[in-house]
Image (cartoon, rainbow, N blue to C red; front, side, top):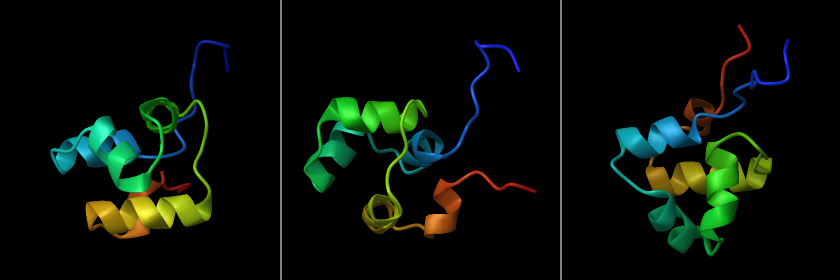
Length: 71
């Protein structure tokens, strides 16, 4: 894999778009900075399992929809 390819680990950005929500909205709901949410959405960093559960709760989705399947 070349350095400019990125492994997608989560689907937070896609789910936010599907739910018509913004990074700012999620940041406000979670008490996080927009920069943190942006890093999660771009897969530059990953939220913890507990944070994924909180994101799923705010977006009213199953937590499994927020992660990329391995198969």
